[in-house]
Length: 202
Image (tube, rainbow, N blue to C red; front, top):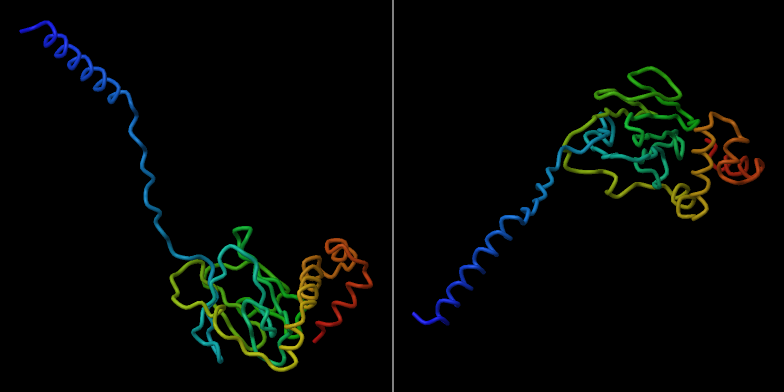
């Protein structure tokens, strides 16, 4: 066997040993496990009336309930305020708050200005009753469906300025009627806040 052939064999063996060692030292690539989707959290399910059986997925956010179509949950009842209540789940504990509504709200049949919600609790706004579910897998989200609107409600809701009116009402309710604190939060004079609140009376 010639010297050249021997050198070629030695070089091939050395290369094989080198790459085998390098491969053994290379860490395995970690695989990210597939994300498992659990049940969605925070639902309202209507228990009576025209909305009976419909459900609204709230998720991790704040939503409003009221007569205006701009609400996440619309109650097309003449005696319900344009924005009657707020439901906030962002803190982890779902809370419902009366937005100084005309009819008030009830939790498990008791009149209240607001409170925490537990799985299975009922919330009544006007004549509409809902059940709160911590989690579930409800198929249809009524928030994405067509909403009813009378001429008066449509006109006020289509106006872009209605957004600031609803924000004013929310700030006023969150500060429990403290006009100065609500106005400061919104960066406006108290007089302007009062003017905005008048637009939502009744």
